[in-house]
Image 1 (cartoon, rainbow, N blue to C red):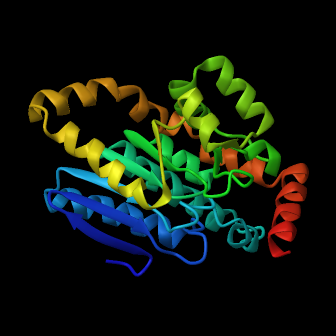
Image 2 (image 1 turned 90 degrees about the horizontal axis):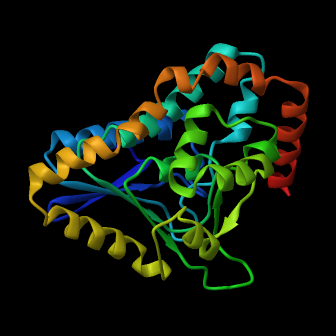
Length: 258
């Protein structure tokens, strides 16, 4: 397994842990390692998957400095975004249920990966004044979330609330995320993986084939959301190079550097 990914088996459930210091920024290598890990888990015959991060952050989203470093190399940028949406697709198309243990902040790409999973458990922040947050903040960094990603958000929070969150590029605290259905459960940080495992164990205790077949029918819209027509990469890359997008992205990198 890649050094960017750590795995641990809990009986018939495999935990796949993002392990790219310091904040699990999603570069192409990590995305491809995640795809390989999800595929390997299913090849190995596991019955369920838990996706987790480190103790402070699930993932900070896409590695924007790396993406900006591609400059005018549209082919490299396209490949990087293709790797990310491939990682999201591996979760969406998993033949077994996937619970995500959101061990900390989950903005942008982290939120997308979470929305692709069957069940979301998020960590409460130990400091109420600095809550863990989740959301699709693309507008704030000059980007437009593709239709497919917007569908995933509408599916869990409803159309009107999704509109408000998307247009504002809002990141919401964990407690609010629970209230609006963006996450399914909150837990203390050291219990997030345990609670994700508990949900999977309860689900896997159901009659297997009826559960899996019902899941496939119920999640058909999730699979459809990430079909290529709903995630037009050429259009997304065009938007990346728009002047206002570049200005906002470079401002973000400068802020991160501080």
